[in-house]
Length: 192
Image (tube, rainbow, N blue to C red; front, side):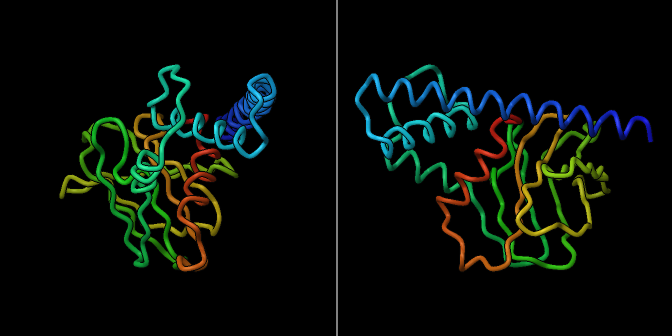
């Protein structure tokens, strides 16, 4: 119980710190855009692209914006799932697909492969901090059967490193791929 409380407090402190960094970073971007004479829409686009590059590990201090082809290729890392089974493959760095959006079901079966047997896999609710450990099966996969809340980002941790995300929505037809992808990436940027 004491460990759980300590973990929850630690997660809250980290979220507060990164929230402050995000606000500070946004303020810096506004100052930069005023100096460069960018309008607010262009400034927000530049900031959004910077967040995407950082989250995907492609930000190397370059100031160029992502072009449409780069944005489309990143959004291709979003998978829509209608079934109750979510399957991902670990490439050594991140899950493929990076982001999975699924239509609500009362129960989900999550299967992850490509991960070393000795690794520790955890599904974490980004809002509550609840952590669910995943088990390794005889087929060489990590599996978990669980219920997932709607409109909550779940991070997939491999040895306590964020490697992917899952979100459950009411109806896949009602979502905009680019908007939900950007929202999830912004919510998880501090962990990636």
